[in-house]
Image (cartoon, rainbow, N blue to C red; front, side, top):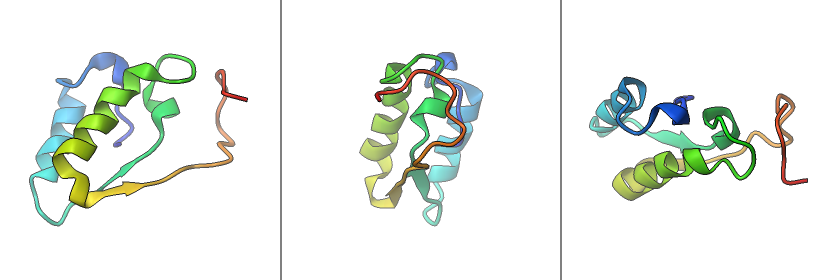
Length: 79
């Protein structure tokens, strides 16, 4: 999700730039990395609106992904 900082909100210029790119038909976005975008611990609720908006607006060009086993995760986890 472009490694946005979820604490800055949906109107932040970085996320708005991603949305601008998504207006170009050949751009796609991978929805993953909520733990990187979030400033909160699991379940990273502040990052959810970003994923929801991308899926809602560009669902035909969204890739789902994971970085499992999350080797760089240093915050709280579901485990």
